[in-house]
Amino acid sequence: MDHLKIHHIGYLVKHIDKAAAAFKQLGYAAASESVWDSHRKIHILFMEKDGYRIELVSPADNSSVISGLIKKYKNSPYHICYETPDLDAALAALASTGFTAIDAPAPAPALQNRRVVFLMSPFLGMIELLENRLPG
Ligand code: NI
Image 1 (cartoon, protein in one colour):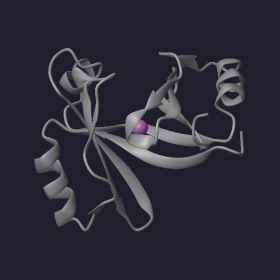
Image 2 (cartoon, helix red, strand yellow):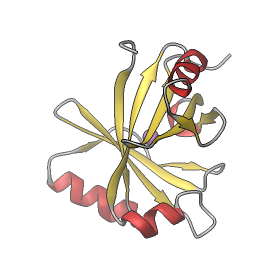
Image 3 (tube, helix red, strand yellow):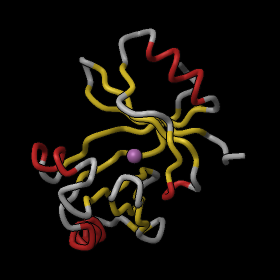
């Protein structure tokens, strides 16, 4: 799997505007506008510092897919996203080595509708795969 490249670290935050302001105090700059993902009911904002990219993820309400996660983990990093040229092949390869997909590949509005999928490992928790090309 040496073709996997780290794209971002996903960071759960309860208040996205206050979190963005705090990251700015640390020297991060916004790398996108805040995007509303209606499928997952989350607000997303990408920020960058020193070549590292983070993804602030904040639930809209208790019906969001991540509202349970934020109750458990509070404000915290919770996944590393890996970019791959072939999402289906990477998914199959990881599934054969103990990773379990927790949803089906779906377009990500905050990432040009490129497909993403989340997987769990019993040894390192959650990861995200991101397809390294535009849909269609
Ligand atoms: Ni992510």
